[in-house]
Length: 75
Image (tube, rainbow, N blue to C red):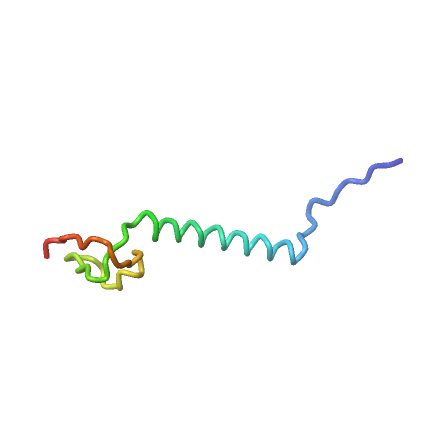
C-alpha cells in the first residue's frame, strides 16, 4: 500500500463556507445584542436625554420599559 499526500489546498464546499458565515454572523449579532441591550441600563419612556447625548432615540441603545425609574440627568 502506498500513501498519497492529502491536498491541503482544496477549497471548502460552498455549503460549509456558507454555514461558517452564518454562524459567524449570528455570533457577532449575539455579542452586539449583549453589549448594547444588557450592559447598558434600561430606561423609562419618560426619560429625558442628557445634555451632550447623541441624537438617536433611546431604543437604539437601551431597552425602553414601563416601570423603570426616571433618572435625573441634571438638564
